Amino acid sequence: MRDILFRGKRADTGEWVEGSLVTMTGPINNGRKYILPTGQGLSFQHHGEEGESIGGFIEVDPKTVGQATHVIAKDGRHVFEGDILQYFDETMFIIWRGSGFYAMRGNGKPMAWVSVSGSEIIGNAYDNPEMLPGPPRA
Image (tube, rainbow, N blue to C red):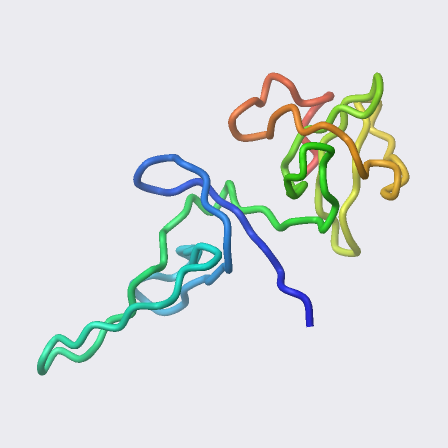
């Protein structure tokens, strides 16, 4: 079994965090997204008669959550959905469509996925929207 890695911007500080994704359901937290950072365990606290709580999860902005593609950039970082890549003279935006990840060129045409391995990450759609090659294609 392989791990599925996600990243998102913290709701409190705007810093990026990577790890396992949890989406809450229920009347209070419905739709909120949390990431348990990689390498961090859960912490349990007992609150007497009030029960227990689980700590370690960080709330993230749901609009910024993206999955790792399992492609590694030339600097050794994971390429995530939402990243903007430079591959030779092409700028590409990584998206997820129901069947998988795609590297979209500025002209709106997908690039062969195997070709993006070794690309340079030059930004992402959330911190650098001005770098997107053409209109966002989420």
